[in-house]
Amino acid sequence: MKDVNETAVTATAGLARRKFLNTAALAGLTFGAAACAEKKSESPSTPAAPAAPAASHGGPNIHLKPGELDSYYGLWSSGHTGDMRVLGIPSGRELLRIPCFVPDPLVGWGITNESKQVMGTKADGSLRYTVADTHHVHGSYKDGNYDGRYAFMNDKINARLCRVRLDYFICDKITQLPNVQGFHGIFTDKRDPVDPAIDYTTRVFCGGEFAIPLPNAGTEDATKYRSMFTCVDAENMEVRWQALISGNCDLVATSYDGKLAATNQYNTEMGAHFEDMMGAERDACLFFNVARVEAAIKEGKFKTIGNSKVPVIDASRDANKDPKTALCAYVSVPKNPHGVNASPDGKYFICSGKLSPTGTVIELSKVLDWFDGKLEKLDDAIAAEVELGLGPLHTTFDGRGNAYTTLFLDSQIVKWNLDAAIKFHKGDKNAKYVVDRLDVHYQPGHLSATQGETKAADGKFLAVGCKFSKDRFLPVGPLHAENEQLIDISGEKMVLLADHPVRSEPHDFIIFKPELVKPKQVYDLDDFPNAIKDPAQSGVFRNGKKVTVKLTSQAPAFSLREFKVKKGDEVTLILTNLDKIEDLTHGFAIPNHNVNFIVNPGETASVTFRTDEPGVYWCYCTHFCHALHLEMRTRMIVEA
Ligand code: RUQ
Ligand code: CUA
Ligand code: CA
Image 1: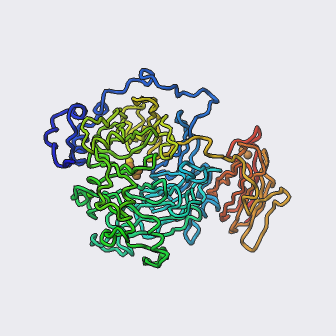
Image 2: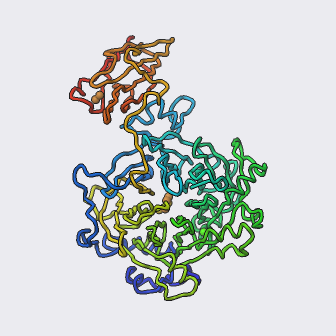
Image 3: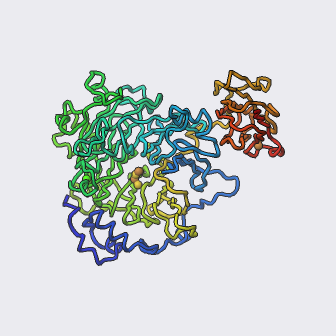
């Protein structure tokens, strides 16, 4: 196809942007120029006439009556509040925030010893990190659909991967990737590339966006910096292997047959400053042949970096030119692509152009053909490359052959048909691949359709994360909520149904059917090795200056009415909630000791603190549990 990057910048300067888009064949703008023009003219009314209320468009009624349950779960990454959020869809109601990387005062995440152990501590027992930046959430799979075991999410700041158990909706493991900065894209694998019995997730792939010196000695010469692609074991959360690549990693996708994992690359130039990252007309989507990578590691073809024991393979361009032995393949994609998404029929990865107004459709069987020596030119795996609009970022699917791509600069979603796009690319200029466009409010990043990243994509609803809400909600000062919008995609035309304000700033999300998870609402006492199973085991147990206080809760009382410790003790207080009724959570706060946490039914949690000041401290239940909730207390008496 023709060069889409260099033309038309000046030609469009005087045209209203939407008019231009609607009337001109998209000749293409560079992202940078378009972004600048956008900024100058930015005002609440710029992107489009304001949407009419949803009712006037028709579409299903999504206002649930009291007591009515949602028909989908949504898992949302939170951005730099570091948690994972659970939403009901279509209502958009927030049901839970699952603390992961960052302390949470409701739960006592980062306060209890159990949560600190998951989060990671320094030698002095304090938390290693209290900031994070979560971007992407993906579930574990079985047979191409979610299996309800786990969800995984990244922390870009500190290169950490967390796992959330979807039985209790809690974070149970966090792994920091060695020698990686700016860990951005993640995706779970969907089956094993070799063993047909493993038709479920056993790996999580992680893309490193920023290049650094390896090992990281503070060298200024950026030509020596490198990025890595990482594979983590989904069960034990240990790093299995890493790949030293040319260029960088942005978003990640995996194939339904387990054979391929890929990452989009916007910086094949390996530039250190943004203007250096835009030199090449085409960047790449980098495919890993998972079976070959793991066979190479078995054969000992790896090195290690610095203190890390993780095997690192050479996935650089130069070392992987011969298809017969290549561990990876660099398929070219126009200028600075962003998202890469797998179509639910298992056939294609769609790369979104970002600085190029295009979507690139890569046929996975052809990539495998190249590895098998059956395809001469790797770029012949590109089944289509079509213009979509300005600033394409992410794509989702309805399971009926259509893709939906966010256009950041156009503040639109474009619905396009994959088969028609492929026909158009092959030369049938009558093939109309754009099915519909919908204005969203404003500047959309991720979007996700119900079940859209599974083989069971059902094409009912689509949520889109709009990065700017501008005028959509009552003003509340300078910080605006983000606007998650809900769209009905069940028909030919997309219908905007609702605006959902969300606390900044979620990035990505997945939406799936409730029957795919089996949440448990009461813990088993045996889940906790330190559980106090009988109130009679309560008491104060001293070992020199170290004191253990064992306590149970049963509404409306704690098992000890008071307990005595001494000034200067290191106290570990263990609390088991013996209430076994759903929704009977207790809290435990100790004034002046920076302690507050909850214990859910059947749960045990512990805290460790020092007693510096003699006195009486009323420890009280902070979670409303009973008519006598306010009376639910115990006294800590600290003796001089
Ligand atoms: S990225 S707005 Cu962090 Cu998912 Cu595309
Ligand atoms: Cu126990 Cu409130
Ligand atoms: Ca580039």
